Length: 158
Picture 1 (tube, one colour):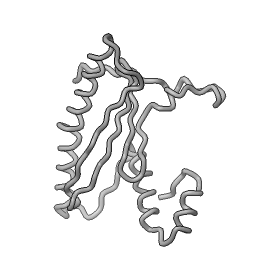
Picture 2 (cartoon, helix red, strand yellow):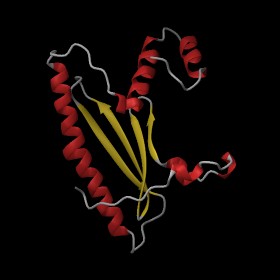
Picture 3 (cartoon, helix red, strand yellow):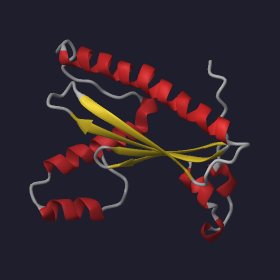
């Protein structure tokens, strides 16, 4: 278990407030996927920190490069600098020593051909939506198809 503590703005704090009173900080909470290969994560660890992750595909499906950029909303102060550095180290460790090695193992398992089809579980709704969108974008045959897709509601059908 990590000793790293991360404070978060609460989306619950917006409940019942008119939209014009919503706090920008609370809206930044979470992970935002920018199609097709960028994610943005916002945390508070002494200072508000934005982690921008970009996955660059390699020459084969089982190779890629991940670039992470850490930005603070304000320059860390003497009082917050250590907490920011600890958090950056924590995220680098989680991504570099846990997430990426697990992804490599999953890719090797999928590449084995043992399982011809994989379905994401119920707890991976965000990924399900992402891949439904990806399938629809890849199936588009024209710019008109893409225009229709992107002008539809944010709800994607399976």
